[in-house]
Length: 169
Image (cartoon, rainbow, N blue to C red; front, side, top):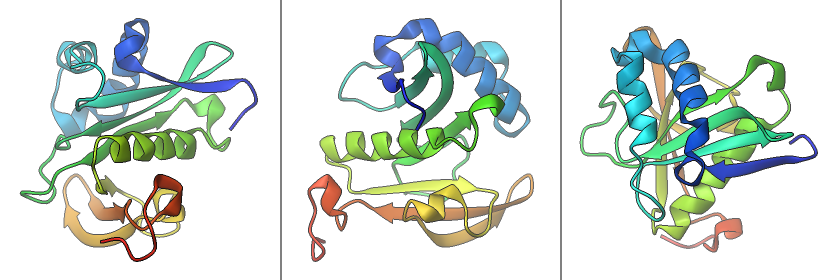
């Protein structure tokens, strides 16, 4: 990621809630069927440290340039009875291709493990060789919802970087 970049928790930095809501609303309002006010409320009403949802914001030079959240459920119930979804991963167009999204996703994985969460899920429109595949997510299903979506899962137990071993279950 770009030199001078950092990741902050939105719960500790509510001043970024409006820009985050703007990005998410612009990118996914049709999909989520939420108004901007409803989206903003989702990002302003955070439960605080140690509880979901967690929203992380990437900053470069003190300016927000990306966001990613970890939620119990995504906006759409992709896989009933399955919890812990990475969602709302967004990077401003001028910062794309610089590793911001990957940095945000890895930071969410660390936070998940700290909370005792050992498996993450996400939905993406990209079939192969996406950022998520490169981060170790594997396809577990497909579904049609506003286009084809690929459902991915990653086990955090087998990754030694998060304290798991190769044989951890």
